[in-house]
Amino acid sequence: MKDEENADKTEDQNKESGNIAKQSKGKLLLKLFFTMLKIGLFTFGGGYAMLALLENEFVSKKQWIEKEEFTNMVAIAESTPGPIAINSSTYIGYKVAGFWGSLCATVAVCIPSFIIVYLISLFFDAFLSLTYVAYAFKGIQVCVVYMIISSGFKMLKTLKKKPLDIILLVATIVVMVTFSVFAVDFSAVFYILIGGAVGLFVYFIGAIRQRERGKKQ
Image 1 (cartoon, helix red, strand yellow):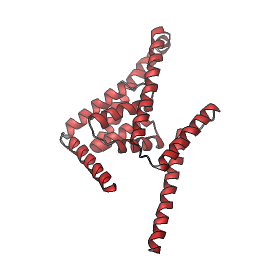
Image 2: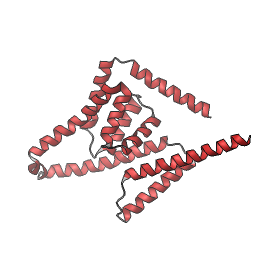
Image 3: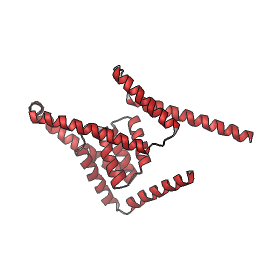
Image 4: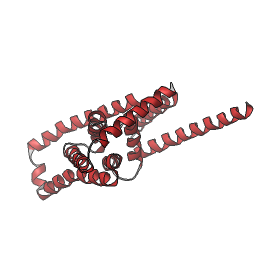
């Protein structure tokens, strides 16, 4: 089973590398820039809503990143300083085209927000007083909720169905719902750090047991 999984991973990685290697550096950076610009322009609701668009573009369509790596990227982007959207874009850019790719992706994803927010700030009060703008944002909020849930379900499908993963998932959901009901302020970063600590603990326990078995044999 493990050999088959490793073979599938190697095949996916070769496929990724092939898709990226076929394009020239300049063309690749240009494609990366306009893709990130498009994502930055049409993302409403913050970084979590952007994850669905990033996965669709870079995992499903372009196949520059495999699903498992995307899931790991989200965990890293969430647990490191800075907005998850920018961290994810920087990671993807570096994965695709190195340093210049990370710079290109980060700048591109920030440009639309910067320009739109700057323009709105020039006539902020008048903008908020427009009735149709308020209704438009209500509709956008519904779409944002769907995009976040959709991204979550896609990541859940890629999760390995091991006992530890299922226990951590259920425990996290229960704690999040409980804290939300009782209005307890608990940062999402702590869920990731605690999950990582539990994973390391289980790994080290397993490694110690294997050593003990090896000594006995």
